[in-house]
Amino acid sequence: MSQFYTSTDHFVLIPGIMLALFGCAVLLFDFLVFPAPKQRKWLLLFVALGEAFTGYGLWRQQAFLAANGIPEITAFQGALTIDGFSLFFNWVFIAAALLVAIVSYRYLEIEGEHHGEYYALILLSQCGMFFLAAGTDLVTLFVGLELMALSFYIMVGFLRRDKRSNEAALKYLLLGAFSSGFLAYGFSLMYGMAGSTRLREVTAALASRDPWDPVLFVAGVTTSVGLLFKISVVPFHMWAPDAYEGAPTTVTAYLSVASKAASFAFLLRIFLGPLAAAREVWEPLLVVVAVATLTVGNFAALTQTNVKRMLAYSSISHAGYMLLGLIAGNDTGIQGIAVYVLVYTFMNLGAFLVVVALRRQDIIGEDVDDMAGLIHKSPGYAVLMLIFLLSLAGIPPTAGFLGKYYIFLSLIQTGHYVLAVIATLYVALAIYYYFRIVRSMFAGEVADKMPLASSFGLRVALTVSGVLTLWIGVYPEPFLRLAQTSLLR
Amino acid sequence: MPAAVPLSWYLVLSAVLFSLGVAGFFFRRNIITMFMSIELMLNAVNLSFVAFSFQLKQVSGNIFAFFVMVVAAAEAAVGLAIILTVFKNRATLNVDRIDSMKY
Image (cartoon, rainbow over all chains, first blue to last red; front, side):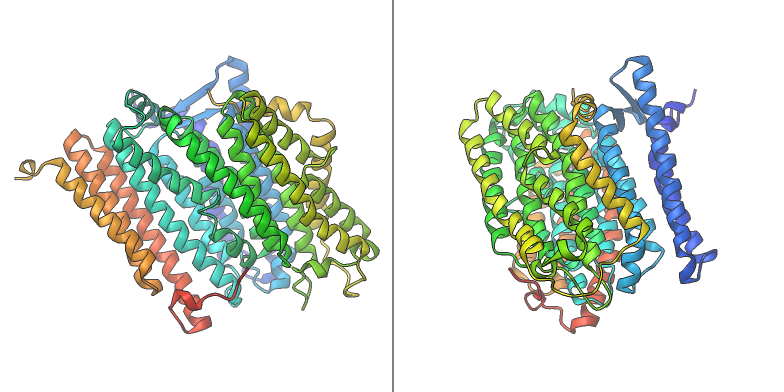
């Protein structure tokens, strides 16, 4: 019997295959069939089809798990694992990619850089994310990470003629490649200690070691440096504000939600797998990192005048809150991270999409002052932005409250009272800078007469994010059940 | 004879090369040199993988080394393209002078 490519392997790999296939199809069709700029909208159809097939593959996997009552399917001798965890994160990626793709069409036309490659890169980076969430082998995870990161380097620098976009891509590339080097070095030491690249065997081998073993320590530190860079927490956050500000706003939205969710999936796989053995070593270090992240993220956001940069710092502080769930480490904490990722996806995406709408011919629209008087000019956008900002600040009844609630609950359950108090204080601080935007929108004089950019895709994406942000906050049960299934065992 | 060289020597060499790469990244200001330092780091990783692989008499370490090479090549392709566009727009390769975005 053939051991190389079984039907189980194929079943598990289908979402990855679909994403890669449709990504390449977009490139090919853009080149051969739709060369005229007017025809590029057909490429969106390919993105939608690709996501539909990917979603169908995931849905069948989910149905298979439920029908047989098993927690996971492994394939390729343990290199890929489909479990509730990977399925949950993949649903998040699909939502983020679809919402970003339908908005990008009009935005890239305004920027004058509408090329078919953009849609291919969205799908290919999502393919990398699939392997990040489903991979349980050091090689699979590393290649998945690089596939995602390389696609993002190109997307961040997509506005070739814009100096800020070039600069953002350069900084992201240099620091991203640097951090991958650290990660690969940590992986090489893990492989040396375990004699295998399978996460399961690495976990078993590392668990038999003393937590303070020097080789394990070096491997843990270098791997953590790589991982913490990707989720952009202090002191490895320097790339994020520049990359977020310089990138095209649609890419910023995609980068800030999908890439962060995928990196968190990766981080949880490593920290709750191989590095779980050294928990007593990394837990105090992560406490320092999380508190520093909350401090820098929130204080730096206070003084920003550029909305994209402010949201970049706010997303750094959100990564800090998510890390707190890992520090608590109980089931509530890990489920809290999943809920937070889901909630954060829609609220942060929505906030960036409003910034996308402010970009019009000749108007950059990224300053807080550009939001002035938005309620008089386009009340719909202003109200949606208010919902997203309330949610980002964590005020009930929006979804953001729910995310923070579970994180804080897990901290209190595990006796981290001081951390819970610090985190709550920073929520108060965050309200201040989010409400600077709100005040500008509702009390400011109308900045310019030009109506906001609008397209069918933008309206759909904003409505979906807005409705979900409210829905998860008001009626969270189905989403909590979904997050419950995502617990790593 | 390769077996005469103990594993630890390879690992020390790999650690030294890796540290040189990190130091180069921090102290050099030319973007191309910084990029070369990153490649040095990845090659140090390869050395460590191959040494472990030889010691353990397995192929999976060698295979990881091949994947690292592929990734490094892809990174170089994308990286040099980005560096080229930056140079076209600014006519400088000094990383300290690429600072249009500030707090």
